[in-house]
Image 1: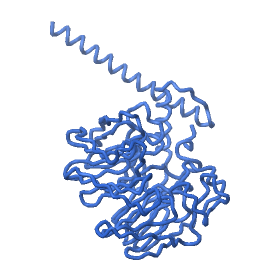
Image 2: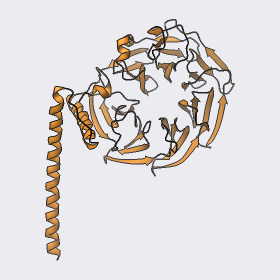
Image 3: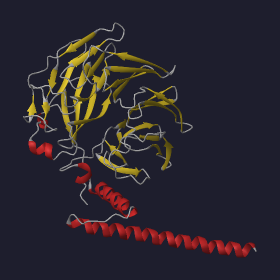
Image 4: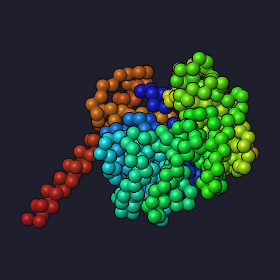
Length: 417
């Protein structure tokens, strides 16, 4: 069983779409399977906590975004259909159904607690879901857009307001979580399709498919457009539609330039989607700077062997200072110190125990779904037989326990009568 099928060739660590940091622990759901993991950051020890008990456990990005609240892990659907709740102490899963009459990709990307309610941005539904976690029920669905064909992108929370950008029109949707009201801003002077939005405490920074950054002040409605990018900044040819491996001059608007943007360390950071460099700007200035990662230069070979056609996945922002990224080229974690403008590669790895646990999960899921098994390497058959023997021993013990219980019931019934 090749775990590279799930984690990419020459992987160093498990890729995921976000980390929940809680003290010295990092909780996350694997992007390639519905398995919940916990990493002890001090000990560099990863354990698999459990997996979501569904038939789609090994499917791509089912519930990749999670949130931790006290003793509870909340798993939000992307390609999945439901919200799953895991109680850490009790080791129990529960499920909350999400209304999705059109059967679209739900794509929950961001969520925030406001006055004991959880507000979840479901991009595919074009709605904000209001969830009562204590009652484990959805109270309401609030529409952001009535246009079924419109695509929405990144969101940001400012006080009790959720701002969400449209990636089809120059719109910003502002939802008031207290009053449940909606306002739409139409930045018609912008000819672009938004992907990212962030806020520095005074104004918003937006980006899309153009080689431009937009600075927008909500109160004054002033708009500044920046297009003076560093000369070496460009787009890697993941799409195969450019003439060169790195396109620095053309602006073909084929895809979004940045995956996300964050405000940390008095800088606004732009995390590449298929661009070649991380960019950053100091608050209150208009100069765009490069933050270079030497290990992230691409070759044709790299791009042909990547699991996803993108550069990074944003994992976390910690203490308004540290930015955690997963490199899809190198399959490892990178942490940027936005105060010192330095970075380091986090050498987290997987020991033999966690690898064995993951393989057993894969074997178990395959057997439950009556899949055909194909031996890929010399250890696969051995591991499969070990797993089958373990399962058989477990069932034998259960049968013995059941027989004891049945015999006990017979004795009890005899004495009673």
